[in-house]
Structures are given as C-alpha cells and as structure tokens.
Length: 438
Image (cartoon, rainbow, N blue to C red):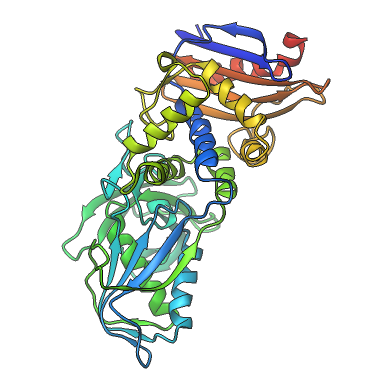
C-alpha cells in the first residue's frame, strides 16, 4: 500500500479537459502545496513588483555625528532581510555621518499579531523548517554555527553567522576528534546575561575534515535583531553606547532616518517555492492579511485572503480549508482540483504567469526536484511544487509533453507509510503523463 488516501487530477489546459482523475474533489492534507495558493494570492493582491520595507527611526536627527537617544529598527514583514542587506542599513547610518548613538537599539514588531510566534508540528523547535515569525526578522530568524578542527580560545573554533553578540556557546566534547562527524547542537534557553545559550556536544571534527555547519532557530527574535544590528553598526564605525535592547514600538514623535527595500516579490517567490521555505511563506501570508484587512497582519487575516482568492476562482468551500500559508499544518485540507484551478488561473494570467511559473522547481536543477523525475521522456518539461509531511507526499505543477501540450497535474497522498516509496510512485505517474494523456 502506497497510501491510505489518494487524490489525483490531470487537466489539459488548452481545452480544460480532464484526462485523468481519482478522488479529485476529496480534500486532503496538501503539505507544502499550499505555497502555490499563497504565491498566487500574493501576486494577485500585492503584485510581482511589491517590495517589503525595513525602516530605521530615532527621536531626532543626528547632530555633529551624534544621535542623542535610541535607534529603532521597524520591519514590515520582509521575508528576505539577509545579513548582507542588514549590513546595507548599517552602512546607510554611517553614510548619514552618524558616528555615535547614545541610546540603545530597539525593535518594533507591531506589524504582526502576535509580535512573535513559532509554528511546529514535530516538536523540533530548534529546526529551521519550524519557523519563528516576527515582523522584523534577520536571516529567517536563524543562525548558523560553523565548527572546524582548529582550536579557539574556548576549545574547538566555532564561528557564528551572522556575526552577533546574541549567542553564547558552550562546548562539551569527547576528548578524541573524529573523522566521522558526531555533533549535536541544542539551545539551553536564554541566559542571565540576555543571550541565548547553545550547547555543542559529541566529537569535534578531526584535521582535514571540512568545517561542519549546524543551523538553528533563535528563541528571541527581537534581541537577535537588536544585538546583530548593534554589532554591524560597530563594525562599520558607529559606536552604540546603550547596552539594553527591547521590543518597543516606535514613539509617535520619532523621525524616519532611512529605509531599505527588499527585492521584488516575484524574485522572492523563486526561493520560497523552489526550496519550500516555510518561513517566507508564513511571513508573506501575514503581510497579505495586513495589506487587505489592515494592520496588524496575522495568520487568520492572511488565510481569509487565501479563502477569498479561491472563492473568486469558483472553488467550493467544501474543497478547501486553509489555516496556514506554508502547508505546515495537519488541519488544512485542499482537493487536487483546487490546485489545478490555481495552476490554470496563473497560467492564463499574463500579469503574473512569468513570475509564478519561474518560481517552480525543475527536475535536475536546484530545489526540491533536484534528484527527482529522472525518467521523464525526452522533450518533456516539468515545473512543479512538492510537499512532504511525516505521512504526506504531494506534487502539483505543469507538465509539457513532447507534443507541446500543457497539463496541470496534482497528486496528493495521505496516510503514507513509506515516504521514499510514495515519492517514487508519484514520480512514475508524472513521468507517464505524456503517454497517459495521449
């Protein structure tokens, strides 16, 4: 048995003819296929050129290179505020002639309700696939530890990215290094000094072993942003006198010093869908909610937007219930026909089709289809989105046959006992679409 519950729908887009179906109207747990609906709704409501903004505020303008008071960093849900782009904000402060900030660095997360939350299905709170969400978020609210065989002042050399004063590292190694990497990384929570304590255990890498990387969620995103930005300011030559950092709303009397825009939404969807980034999908969902229903953004408001978009496409409520923008949910239910309806609508919409289709993974290229669909007939093109949970395997996307016929294909399997077997069967089905459809 590949799965207890199966839903399949294949439709030829040129004439909207269903060429194969099996329980196509049955709502099933779709996993990450939900990102297709989030992407479509975002492109329709925000537009491919929409940019997310991060702002810096202060009590007043600097005088003679000194900012008297604190600095606020206020995010509006940018899902791609990388350390490199945060560095640009620090350089903007330096470019304004500011050399010293007499106050502290504070973070305003009031654009989201709640200001901070984490989604998790498997109990692994430290893992990045269980996103930590906040309106101001750097590096997806994660940090990476690089462990090498070199020796540092406190044992094995450990580098933290992005460079930050947020993390305190404790090392508890067995004595002998190992060519077989045996390393565990866990968070011990927030320490008395306000930093998060991470503990490394196991055997450190031996000489000639490449550095080992471990990526973790942060538990206090406001403090992480504040301390990371403070470190960057100091490295570009801006001294920050205050040591405290708090989650505080920007005072009404403050002035905007500068801001930074994200890449356009169409570009961000490329990374979100190809790599199935839960953090980005959930951030965009909350921004969608705020855009349509007003601040603060929330998952509830965002899901209302998704629901309204599906209603406009003629989708019956009985075939779709969504409580997530990423698919990290076991209560969301969507039928295969609904996904093909979205695929068809995006394909026929000239204003969003290029960005929507370009965001999908291709077999043999980067992303979730890198090592899949190796048996496609020559001349067949696939662009698609995959989904996986503990007992869920799914696929939805476009298949172009050697005869240049375009099909929307969705397969959802629930109650899967063996993930790899189910993926193999889904791949075989997709590979046979050209012959199946004639």
